[in-house]
Length: 171
Image 1 (cartoon, rainbow, N blue to C red):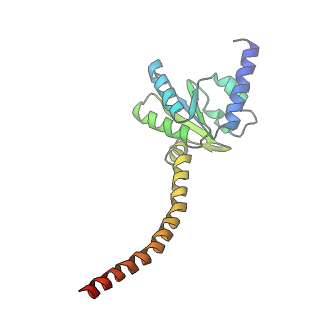
Image 2 (image 1 turned 90 degrees about the vertical axis):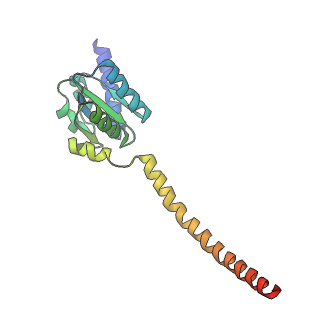
Image 3 (image 1 turned 90 degrees about the horizontal axis):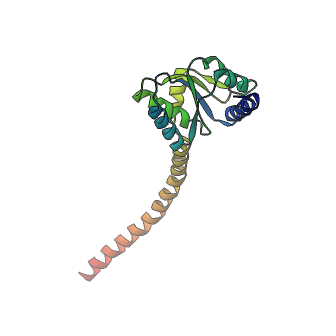
């Protein structure tokens, strides 16, 4: 890899570190190519990405970025998982590390907040952006359906009373 390629890689990594909602650093020693492809596929499905980069270049890219605190985790065979959604990458890495003990979570960052292993697991247990939006929409829609039910209930009660009055009058 020549100097121009290294500079391009550092720029790409810098953009990743700036734009990602969450960055998770893990050790992947012993993972097979098929297992790594499986991790990449799961991450892609969740809207994130996985990147293996030289630790030295990643540390250069981290300089001055909000998630610079993850530089301490970059030693040995590390893989960087990231996503714009502040929860997606953490969820996928956490789930994958439960099924494959060769992937070990080292830590991460959420913006300028450093995360240790417990922090990454806590972020992974949070609802995703889509789940939060769905629950907010549900909360907004619930009062409207309650109002519609309340408005419709007296009318149906009146209709029931009138119907029973007619039945009594006819009998």
